Length: 543
Ligand code: NAD
Ligand code: MLT
Image (tube, rainbow, N blue to C red; front, top):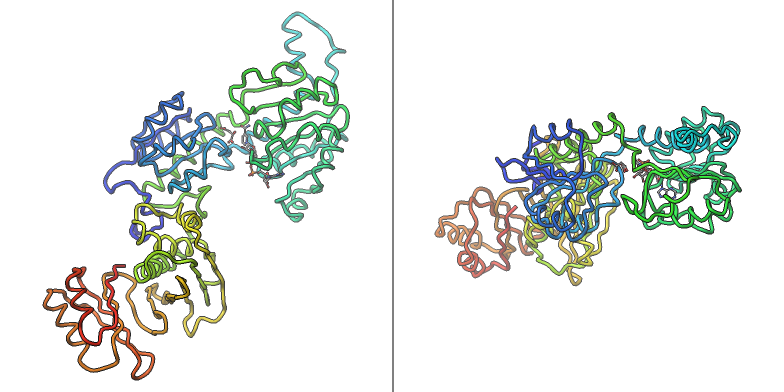
């Protein structure tokens, strides 16, 4: 992949300079060493929010776990930050919205700690069922009380799982071997996936009513915050046991403490808290609630996995590649990128051409994909078109692959995408239409069999506009002695013409003239060109 054609190009630090990475939470040594193989790395943990705001200005990348809070204030101060890498899954400690607006990639490393989190959940469930921490503490104090610590079996009990993603599914698979019946609630999981896992998908209420053990495995979002609150505890089976190894706040902490105190809930096991470390948390007050200090992913294996995964993605970005797990930009595998890259480049140039011809103030952008390109994943192509369009108007540096779509939305510009089979005689065509106060600029482009990118139509004109370089695009009358004087004006200005394409819709109708030139034309020469008799309009364009 060439740097110039990569959608992440504008995210790369200056050529020849090493990316500067701040690691602000503890990260496995292997990950730090991997980062150091291609970047300048500072490991500074336990920074106060104020210190982080000051420090962040110096860095291109920030690597965190769950300890560092990357707030809007931190992002505002992060003048050169390109990427926030989360070694782990949860990104609830990052203001992704603020990062996206600023064009900063937020990426995580899902999968690396799934098994550890699932095993910790099961460990917590077992200790909860058999009162192990309490019995251990009692024995250490000299107490021998076998009756007090009588537990319950898993066998023939019902396990309710809320959130059947990576961790939830691994917990389910393992808990089946204990002879448990599993009920799962996840509105985003298909019946097909549940069947594949040998599970029954049920409404949340059924999980709550029927679970002997209930474990949550969702992310913390506005929708899942307090998903299990006072009302939900009211419908649970008396004696239910609750586990939260996902995120503090999915289960309301005060409501859980109350349900345990009242005896509706026999016990709970909690690894995660709304505020970490937890202070004055009611969950720490009951000896029926087993707690661990966010240890779900704390195994040697998981820490190395996530540290290497985050380091590799950051180094990939530093080299101009695309990360595999960006939260705020479409994931593109290297294979897909290899196929889509010519279309992405073409779309970006088409966007830039439309922007230069039409200027700002447009109300809608439409992209129509026809022929073979319509069969592919067109999301990165659309983003490239937006990037090209806005980049030429707002300055290349301010629009990138991460924030292009967001910026268009913030401008109130409507985005329309559609696909058609027929490609007008070409094997593939991308049509871009920009609508401004009822005037539409329409551009069509195609990628040829040998990956050459061509703009083949501008408004009503069939043409050939190279997808790169500087050019003058004019509309001239269909009369003799206009093209010659135009070339003379450019020649007098010492501007060499590399190629020329002239076309008309019908005899006597205005013609489109595209002159490819070797250097940009001054405003003065453009003025002279515009006043050549018969020239209706002339615009300098750089692609
Ligand atoms: P995941 O994205 O693979 O799975 C989350 C699942 O929750 C998805 O299937 C999603 O459809 C589902 N979901 C989303 N909203 C829901 C809702 N309103 N109701 C029900 N289901 C909903 O994530 P994962 O990797 O399985 O991680 C799960 C959780 O565990 C996350 O919160 C993650 O941060 C946390 N985690 C904690 C530790 C730890 O150290 N304690 C370690 C790893 C993961
Ligand atoms: C995660 O979301 O990956 C876990 O909570 C683990 C961690 O914070 O490191």
